[in-house]
Length: 287
Image (tube, rainbow, N blue to C red; front, top):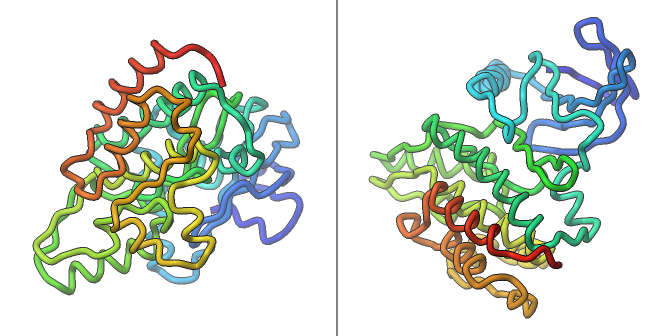
C-alpha cells in the first residue's frame, strides 16, 4: 500500500499526491485525504504497515475485498495504493461531522443513513459482512451521501464455531478488528457451537443511526468514563436523550430493533431500508 512515512507528499505509480490531512485510523492503518498535483482531484490514500507475511496477506485480502464491489455507496479502488472517492465534494467523515456538532435535518439524516444502508446491502448480497462499521469509516459527500471505507475487517457473512479454541480465536479477532463502541454483543463473548452472521453489521448501523440522531454513539459515554463497554452493551439498555421525541417514532423503533441483543430479533438490511425509506418519504425537512 502507499506508505507516506510522515512526508507531506507521496509519489505512487508515477503520480504525486499532496497530503492534506489524516481522515481515518484503524488498528493497522491510516487514511489520508490527498490531492493529485497533476489534476487537483482528491483521493484517499491508505497507509498499511506490513511487517510480517500475515500482515501482507491481510493487505492482499483487503484489496480483494475492494475488488469484489462496484457500488456508489462503497469506496472504489483505483490501484492497490490509491482509493478514490468523489472529488471536490467530500466533507470528511461522519465522525468529523459529529465532532463538529453538525446538525442534520431529519430528512437529510435519514437519506444519508439510507445511502450507508444501501452500501451495506450490496455487501450483504455478496454474502460478506463489513464487521467494523463506525462513523469514522463513512466518508460524506456533500453532507448528504455516505461512502463506506475500510474493508480490512470484511469476512464472509456467516461462520460457525465448533470448538472452544475456534470461538476464542474469533473473539480475539473481534477484539482486535471491531471498534468496541459499535461492536455487536455476540462478538464480545463467542460461545462454542454458535454462529455469527451479518446481523453484527445491523447492530453497528443501529449505533451509527443513534449517533446521527443524538451526536454521539449510545456507548460513547461509557467508553469515555473508562467503564466496561461490553457490560453496557450486554445489558441491552439503550438510554434515549430527551430530544428523541423530535424524531418520528418509527425511526426510533427501527433503531432500537437494530440494537437488540438477540441477533435473530434484529431486522435484515432490506427491512431497515424499507422502514426508513417510508419514514423519509413521510418526514418534513425540519431539524
